[in-house]
Image (cartoon, rainbow, N blue to C red):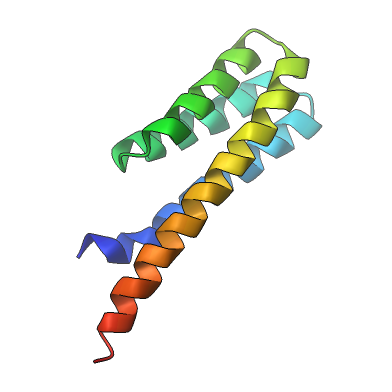
Length: 101
């Protein structure tokens, strides 16, 4: 079942977001861009279109060397990851709790 992929998906999203923030902290636009490209790819592969779109925006801001935009958009990206996390965790919990019966 696909639902069992959710924990790995959430880990991948978290790692990419952490890498984007680390890149920002080190002033590395390349690291931010690469992390957001990974995040967008993961989101796209799992049908998370809004998340993909925001990650692509951060990636473009990083490629343009626009740290102000990266700062603003990373906050929006983090909020979107968290929103998707809540929804996916609820699906996972509901599905796996059915396995107990």
